[in-house]
Length: 427
Ligand code: HSE
Image (cartoon, rainbow, N blue to C red; front, side):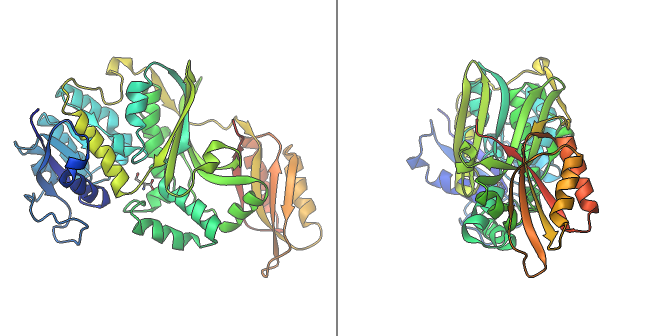
């Protein structure tokens, strides 16, 4: 088999991880040899974990993509637009297969890029874009093409999972743990993409487009993050027998494919409650399979680079794969905006003024919306004169809970913003 010559654009944690893998390929199980034709990145002189001075340097990703000696263009620049998109388009137009770890690019422009790949008869592969080293894209696209998927869900952002796990385990602050996630190479260059839930939203949108043969429309995805969570929410949830996680899900509904990312409170026995640190876990439910769960390292240079190399290795075999697993004529579903109709138990955390009647005003506001309390936990007031209270409700509609929280916001006995998180039962 002929060797494959890579053009690698982007030399951050993943790009450097890939260079290391190419250099150590004797230890891997590739069908034939991979070499590096050239590299490019924003800055040539940055301190890197690998020495790239021996490789031809290109001043632009587009030039590298179009180089006649590049067999596979590997895009690890990141960002939904700008140089990453231009270079991927240039590579596809030049008839070169593209391997990318760029979830923002695929979530925002995946359909158009898949069409371009199709028109040019080349592959567009993005295993590394979702859940780092966890092989879920190809599993869903190829191995699970024989099932009718009903729901895809999971923990898809290692930084957020690391944040919630580490804060709870060590009592360290949000800012401190986030800085560590950045140092360890889990977090995005702009970590607001992680903590706002956007990164997980990109990933669940991609998985849902594959799982449901759906026309990916990222604007319909409902996105919430962890930036408002504090240690108090995590510890109170734990004391009530729950764990808080950022959960992404894509569900097939009568209205279409609904994708949502939000923190959820999981029963301690829930399988996703056992996923700690930067690990990711994806559960696929469908018929006639039932459910499968795949878990593993979802972030970091090494694991993500291994997924990139897995895609490169696929390209030794001829025969094109359709990027999302379905041909364009088989886009049978549309994305839909999440409705507020679902019913669930809820975790509500507030800080109450330590005065008589405060708890009564809280329970009155809930009662007005028909919210019934299942469990309640209150601590003595802190130095600021407010007592933290956590409530677990019985089943209640999302819209009722939102109205109840609006009422709580008007109460003078409540300090700060109430925190409302949906509880997911073990299933
Ligand atoms: N920033 C991502 C995460 C890793 O924390 O999961 C790359 O997708």
